[in-house]
Amino acid sequence: MARKFFVGGNWKCNGTTEEVKKIVSTLNGGDVPSPDVVEVVVSPPFVFLPLVKTTLRPDFHVAAQNCWVKNGGAYTGEVSAEMLVNLDIPWVILGHSERRSLLKESNDFVGGKVATPAQAQEVHSELRDWLQANTSPEIASTTRIIYGGSVSGGNCKELAAKPDVDGFLVGGASLKPEFIDIIKSAEVKKSS
Ligand SMILES: O=C(CO)COP(=O)(O)O
Image (cartoon, rainbow, N blue to C red; front, side):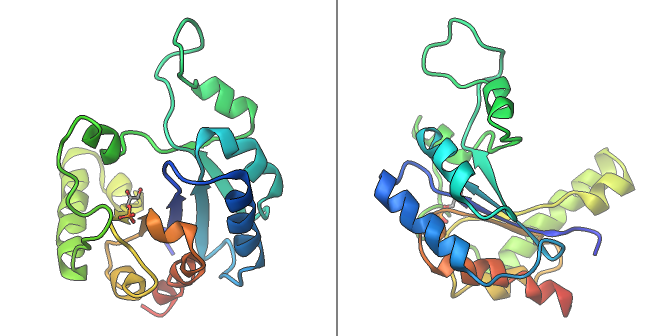
């Protein structure tokens, strides 16, 4: 498989210590395809990173939700990439649309409105065409283009079946047991 399916769980600004322990326990008990079929990364709020990192099953990875563009210094409230690497967290979500929406830009598909599988495929295919024209055939064929916006246990299989949907960034549903079903949707790729 040229592009391994990717499932990211963005917990956004949610959770208490007890809730985080519960989510981790659900994930740890979930029966999911092996890491050669799907790469799973969950992204808790900064304050829970060490807890999740030390308690989450080793076949799942942990990401931060943002990081500062510069090294450490007089940047109150920021977290640098160096700090994440120091915690052995080499993943980070950068440029999430909700960070722009804090400044009131629209965010139509997040939190309730899902694109149809055909719409997702159309946009992903155009992005891949752009990569083909502007980078290289190798980059175009190996870059994973993941869909985010109201992915759920109910719609994940149909979305995953589209050839240019290489995975998901899941928000609300990543806090629920249905996240396991979403991870399982990677199996669709094996039969396509
Ligand atoms: O923003 C998203 C993933 O980071 C999508 O969020 P929802 O799945 O809650 O719509």
